[in-house]
Image 1 (cartoon, helix red, strand yellow):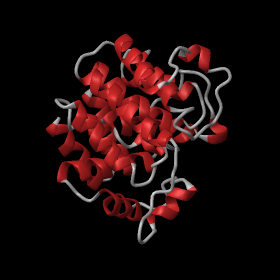
Image 2: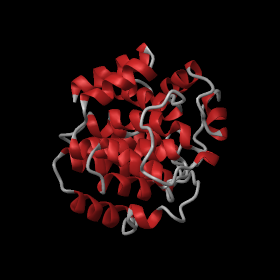
Image 3: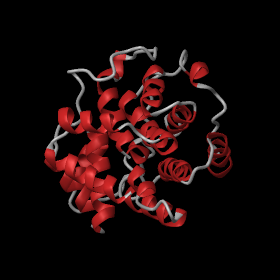
Length: 256
């Protein structure tokens, strides 16, 4: 789950016109910062750990952290009263849901149910729901020691995503895209081809596009597959996250 936050932080400096189509770059950088991906992931962890009402809790978290790169329609939703889902299939559906897998690692149905519950409040389009469920399902399988090839097969069969293109094949032509359809398959592939969390994040950034979100989706799957170096968590908490976010994430990490 920390893989999502680390992917977000490291990827934050490579979005839009800052594509870096190569795996060689300084991993931690002074210009990195957490974005909406981290805020929303922490909010989902808070919701699921404490059985909170998803919509007002997510709104409250985002209101407390303004200016973190929220999408236009989501920004409006944050201040909606009453809140209404807006039929989105954006990749925000997938970048925030990894806590559902980590907190329900013994029960796939519960993991998918929680993923749907925290997604449908905003991203209620079928493709948005699918992106969230596919991400959680992949992470859950990895947590339960399924091999990368098996995870790839389940995601393709159950969700209809094509994961056949390798990272190297994707990199030359891939462009910025904020939909689940054109982000989730690529992000999952970046993790499934990886040797660890850092390698998965390097894969994600190397294809370009919506770098922080692609890395935030790839990171938790890679963490579930390979584990995570404590030094990565320490650097994220000590140098890039505030006490509130660190506390929520560390409490969840201890529950896993």
